[in-house]
Length: 435
Ligand SMILES: Cc1ncc(COP(=O)(O)O)c(C=O)c1O
Image (tube, rainbow, N blue to C red; front, side, top):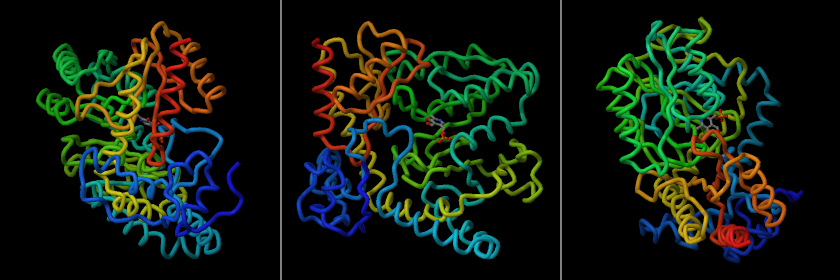
């Protein structure tokens, strides 16, 4: 059960320990729940700095019911962000239209500026959405350069609902839809060769869906290289960055992609219901207005999204989430998540019959990684493994299908995950594979 009393984040860790039995062991008694300065170290020394990460962990109130290694669904808010969201919800509820009609436009514009600066875009290049799904559906569905007989491309690892949107283009635009498989083992070289080959085999290709971080296996795509290949052949890329920004540290200009859909409620830790889309300057005309929106001029990117009434409080909380993201350190966060992934993967690789589906190569993986047990080829087997880990060992994971070579088990640590949590997981895996 969640604790009934909600305490301020400045309280000591001794008090915080009672909120999470599992994480209490990892905290440093007496340390205040504010962050010390980011350690000067880098690499593994920073990623494993016990004092710093215990302070970060102390900002999160998590259920003691399980060791949650299924943080890929969405990212729970840190306590300071949650407190802000509660305060903003109270304010919006109290002030109602008095606030929304007179002040929200200004607050929203300021928040858009903050976000644009954090992700490295001009404010005019981004528009808020309710999440990555909405952003990507608007980009894929609104992309108006396709003609009947053109080809659109996507891979087995792309997200299901984005695959549906690409398939729908057949009906909507009369295009041919080509789906291909990402190789296993997925080395950088093999991935690049696959995209090179698919582009060469499909000279009428005009649009490619690409996923930055796969929600199925955790594979990180070499986006800039693939986008450059596509561009050289006149193929536009729609990038699914639902899982990347916040987990991986980058600015938009590094990607070389003109159309991107983002989430803010996964790795940025903003309230649920927030994402945004990016359309590069000069490309707005290639995406239709959302259902012929007339609220905004057609040269304003906000005419490409029409969500209706906002969750005002969620958007108003974004500055706090971005501030915490900056304070923890985007690079430090990425390194910590990669360290946690390497921590369990290096142990799991020593176990017989455990196949790790992401390579260790730098740039090809972040915090998420999936595994498959030898002989597990059906969703039922993977689901049984999820149930065993949950019911016998108290560890939450999730089964992911849709991978050409068969279903797998996805492991997603978060910033509040400890090495002890991962030891518990690898011990369970060891017992299961030895049985
Ligand atoms: C790769 C990928 N794309 C898109 C989405 C959709 O995100 P949302 O449901 O938050 O809109 C997800 C969600 O998990 C995802 O993992």
